[in-house]
Length: 131
Image (cartoon, rainbow, N blue to C red; front, side, top):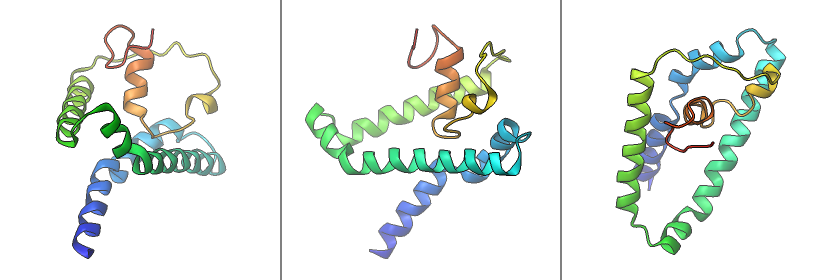
């Protein structure tokens, strides 16, 4: 029991990568006041926790309903992460034409930030094309 819990917590820590997200968070919200940074971080934690809990609750049921084996889902997820990592390493500098207020741009950080940036500003070549 303790061994499985430890394994799951280590896996969660590696996937979330809180140490690696700190520089990205500071780059996005570094100029905000301390209260605004806390609010942005709290929003991100709440959004991430809700997404995590929803997938814990119904994820296996959805996979079974769609007839997808867990091993196949893991392979597909690994391939998606590989594509995202390669695109981040090989990406050119992007310019943003987003005219929303800075506080609206940062909502939900860091939950899905890399995928959001890719699909939001890289129309036509994103993993999930949102045209």
